[in-house]
Length: 253
Image (cartoon, rainbow, N blue to C red; front, side):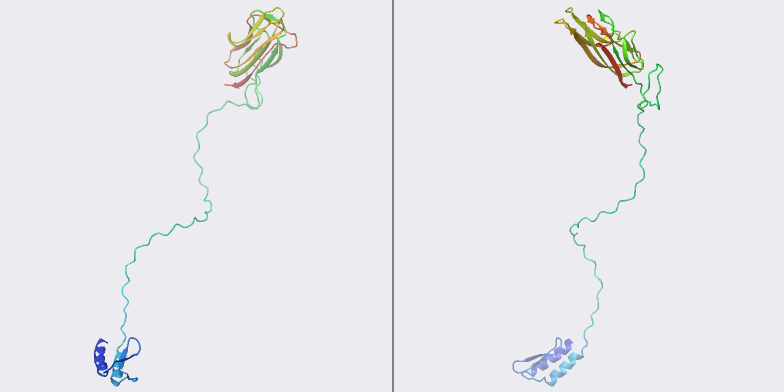
């Protein structure tokens, strides 16, 4: 193709003494003819030679190497939550707990005759007694009017409560002073001979007065609880129960 152009261009130049006239003949083919509406024979021959040249054949090259990966795009929105997974296997067995208090089924009795509660399985212990006969001086008050003695732990002949089930107990007492002579009265609640609560009633204007108190104590089996005068006079009151003594088990050991 280059050879044909070398031959055609001088021929075209020789045929033109003035400015050339250009015509487009097909793709990338241009023939020069000065002011001649018809191409010369030489131009036609050059054009035929150019058209006879075959078009170049394009051969596809080998595939290039892949380019570098691009930067990651922005994070997309979260997807819908998936369905729940299958149920897992059971876990290991935990440690055993501490042993609790023994429980019983039905009503039972202790060796001393105390009734056991079927609901919670502990001994039911409670008493409430009144003072019929008057006392004075320094003696144990023998509350001889027994109203309640659940478990039979109170002895009206001695005026003492004897613990047979160790635990926490509540006790309260109210002693009416026999007044009229201007004296005072002291009443102490004792545990095994030791004072655990005291109360005083004064006859300042020659009237009756009360001495009362209450305690919460831990008792062991065999402990004794009683109320003792420490001077003065205690009014009995026959069956009216002006002076009373009571207690019950709160929590067993």
